[in-house]
Amino acid sequence: MLGPLPAIRLVDILDILLVAFIFYWILLFIRGTRAVEILFGLLFLVGVFLLSKKIGMVTFPWVVGNFFGGFIVILVVIFQSEIRRGLARMGQTRILGWPPLSRGPDILEELSVSAFRLAESRTGALILLERNMGLSEYMEHGKKIDAVFSYELLASLLSPLSPVHDGAVVIRGERVAAVQVILPIPAESPATGGMGTRHRAAWGISTDTDAISVVISEETGIVTVFFYHQKKVASDVEELSGILRKLFET
Image 1 (cartoon, rainbow, N blue to C red):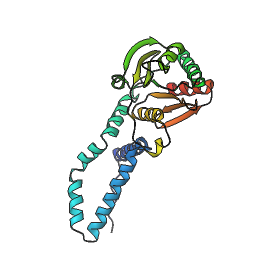
Image 2: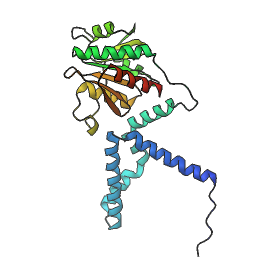
Image 3: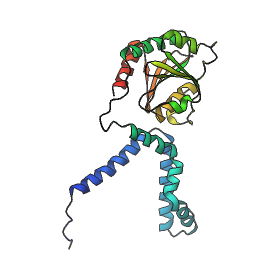
Image 4: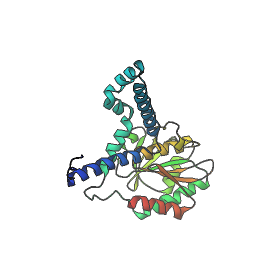
């Protein structure tokens, strides 16, 4: 006969919920990244390992078993960038109710108007709006400035005749903080398929950080907003301004 079931304590329920939340958060975090493909590859390898042991193989289970002997170290090496980003996002979580960094309505409206004026002239641009996670490490690869934002300034910086028109423009608060910022280009993936270099860089930075990227295509004049694992195309100034306001309110 089965013995009496052990009593379930409140701490056991909290323990299960915490583990479930961590797994859910991890899956949500790596969704749409190459980490998903790597994870499926590891799961496939584990499945083949278990099957080979069951049918009596010797060499393959020995090799794979030694490979998995340092499994924790392997995970850290393979997923080091994802772990770094995850810890950074955990650190910026407003557990104590800290308010998010915000932008005044004027700067968001002026930026929206400026973006579509640039789009009309087919001036390509990648504009980064810094939020809670600083972009200083990326700004080291560009030219630091400190100037009040305006369309005239943005247009002069992004003009093809400007020596600093390549790369991204970083906006911190209501000021232009850096120009000619060279961003890493993420590897080709289903999420970035068909994107040009500027759009892929925006996808990558908006995946690695909480920054918001506004990209203007010089070929089509389409204005696209990139933010954590998502992108939205803005059809006009009002829509772009609304998207930016909503993002900075969250």
